[in-house]
Length: 118
Length: 175
Image 1: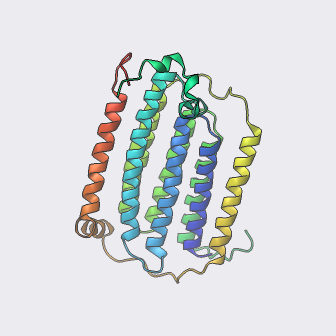
Image 2: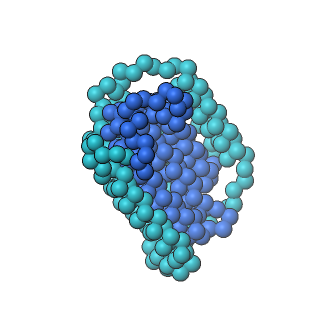
Image 3: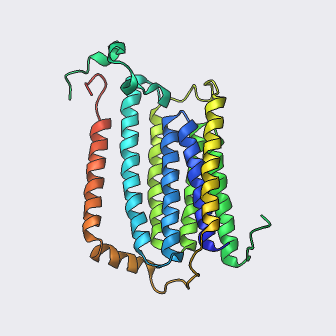
């Protein structure tokens, strides 16, 4: 097994562990961390191909730099949304963030006052 | 691991060690019930991945990985943990069906990926690139990829200003 195949296998394993965390964990912060793990596994693939691929070049490293930047932005916005949701619901359980899938008739009274806002 | 015809060179040994660390951190993070422990195990995984990047001759990306993931994202998550309440963690009812289904699905995905990787042919290994990795990355970033670089900086600014604007509102204010 070459180094490239080993790196790809490791990245696949990390991606699957992250996917399992996203699917089963109920704490929103753990879900965000698992998403970061999946993004990092993708970065490992990019860097492995930039070293051992058919055309070794720096492009993979640069692409992984860009994806890291986007991941940082995503984490910041995710935490901000999480804190706003926590203030309104006093929970970080992702199973309870289901406002978009509920019928409009079942609105909680606490949600009504913010209509007409932004 | 018999069918793998591994050559135990120093590079592969370092890779094996770092890979074991990364997988162990990820598995521990998935199995811990306390959120802080999960965040710390994830940080361990990120550090191991930075070591792997050094092994793959991507020193600058490894540095950015430590700075950004271990230094920024994990700390951000820990601040998120501090600002929310986690007293009732680990007390929820278990969902065996969902967890089993998710585990089976993830294992199937891993199996498919593993056999795809095993069955594909890869190009022969080339000697590592000469010269300063950081210098080469910087040259490439500010010549060929100058416009994406500027766009990403705009995206970061917008995202962070948006995050501050979202999270800054006081109690009782409309959202």
